[in-house]
Image (cartoon, rainbow, N blue to C red):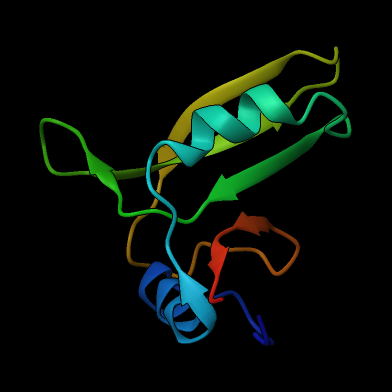
Length: 96
């Protein structure tokens, strides 16, 4: 996506919107079911409008496969700070 340092969530999502769009929340479960060959110890972050908890804390889906090969759909914090590693694998929709 062209970043040379860890982007914030607004910067990351802004760049995604320049070349495509955020996913719907339905994409997380679909990716989890579809990618049966996801490499061990990987996580796919689903770029989506965050889901907030009772206190307004933003979360997005993460599709991960652990050391034992178990695959999980979880929700992880997606705050405004520079929290995205340049190695993170981000799932988003490309423009047609």
